[in-house]
Amino acid sequence: MTDAGRCDECGAPRTAGLVACSYCDAPYPGMPDGVSCPKCGDENMASRPRCARCAASLKRSCLFCAMTSSVGLAACGHCGELFEGAEQRKAERDEQLRQQQLLGLAVQGLGVLGQVAAGSGGARGAFGNGAPASKGAPSKGGAGGGLFGEIWDDLSDAAMGKK
Ligand SMILES: [Zn+2]
Ligand SMILES: [Zn+2]
Ligand SMILES: [Zn+2]
Image 1 (cartoon, rainbow, N blue to C red):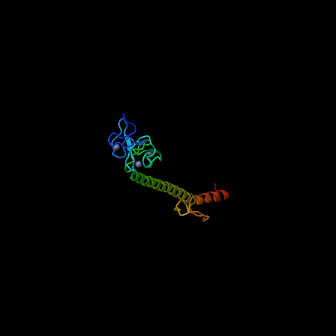
Image 2: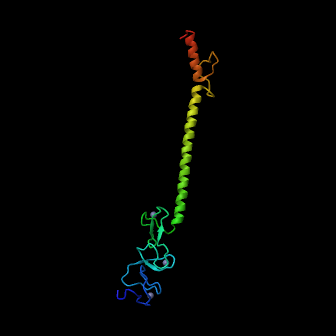
């Protein structure tokens, strides 16, 4: 660093925070790799949150984890998701998630329906409503078939002292 104040190439005054001359794009000697400003293209020091020249943000926020990373990074520094095509991937993933949730709801719904069906089926069998009433001897009291009929028969038999 012979002349800290001026560009070696064009002699323009250095802009603090940049790693290359904003006039001729010559890199300042001894500077680390910079981050190009997405707006004006100047090479900023990677640690800067904003462009030293146009004040555009040099951070971008991750669509996936909402943390901010330097625009010089290809992927989120927090969750590792690539910034390139992030919007599309996010949309696709949201859609997948939505479909999984829908599927989950559908499966849950089917499960509930199945339980209801099994429950009402069992009840129907137990109370003889609509179940085939072909259980042994025809009931005397005409109380209907099924379990009720049998219980009724038992009760009436017991009442008449036949058992
Ligand atoms: Zn220059
Ligand atoms: Zn800029
Ligand atoms: Zn992230």
